[in-house]
Amino acid sequence: MTLTSIVNAEIADQPAPQGRPCEKCGAPIEPGDHFCNGCGQIQETEPVAAEIIQKFLRCESCGAEVAMDANQRSYVCPFCDSTYVVDFAPAETGRQPPEFVIGFAIPPDQAASRFHQWLRENTWFRPGDLRLAQLEGKLRGVYLPFWSFTMLAESAWRAEIGEYWYRTESYTVTVNGKTETRTRQVRETEWWNLSGRHHDYYSGYLVAGSRGLGQQDSQRIQPFRLEALKRYEPYFLAGWLSEEYSVDRETALAQCRSEFDRRVQADVGAFLPGDTQRELQVGTEYSQIGSDLILLPVYLASYRYQDKLYRFMLNGQTGRIAGDKPLSSKRISAAVGGAVGIIALILLLLWLLGVFGS
Image (cartoon, rainbow, N blue to C red; front, side, top):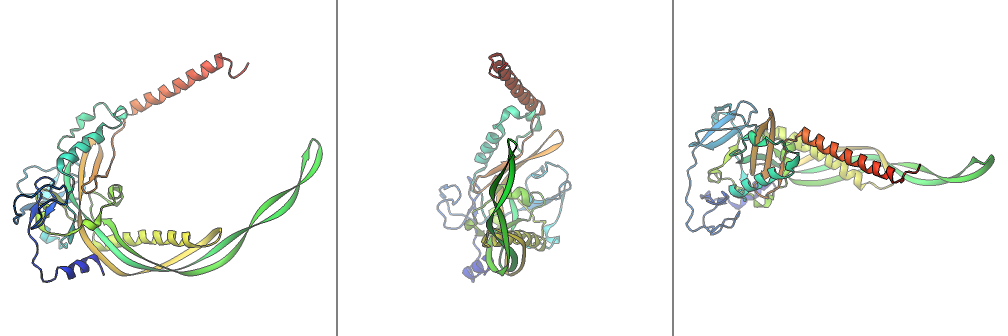
């Protein structure tokens, strides 16, 4: 049973909840909540339904499609720092709506503080004119789409298992013109054919549905705590950007199966007996496949320095940070040159002191 079917069973015949985001951190507040689950802020008034009016823009540079507040007058793509955007109508795409969401647990002011702290780290190796990259206002909170998969993997495997044994052999050497006979241990391997079956159930594997932030980058700020998932309601997105998925389910499922194939291969290899193995072949069939389209909170800041794109990422739920910053080749060269000079000076002093002999 998938996460979707479980929740569907639990909320059957119940009206859809209405609410609003927390005024401090933006996490979703459901009716009757007295405290924000994200930041703990006291909710003094009863939440009311919020009407979300959005416009949808497609970045002509990277292809990301983002929903944003209709009152926002200007727009810069949070993924590639481009201003080349056009309107599009999401109803024409035929995409399915999100099923679950995790709200932002880190308020924007804390995210901005962590961004600036991250920028200040290792500043000696950073270019002195990094400030010209115009970093202010770049950090944006975005709900990113992910496909969450669960499935049963049933595998049949076969391999050759090797067991080590040792034999003693004699050999001769010449020492000071005389021949000596010595012995040594030589390792041999005895091989056995082995086959069997393996099964495992995988749950909660995330595949990025984003064109702006792909699988490799998104894994740098994982994991998310998926136990905090809530059924999606439009009011969760009030005040935030939200990207439409551009990786469809079938494409994401193929990526997921490829990753599970790798995991099964590794699991079977670790399970096999013996001292070594070779020719491991694994055939896997997947069943009970379930998927959910979920939105997860991420802070992004994309900026350009000397025509190269750099990106900062912060997990809006856990606070995990990843990103890349430009390096100053001049400063690195100076550091390397200084280190080489110090080593040369030390060697010279040791030579003068006669440490290396005459």
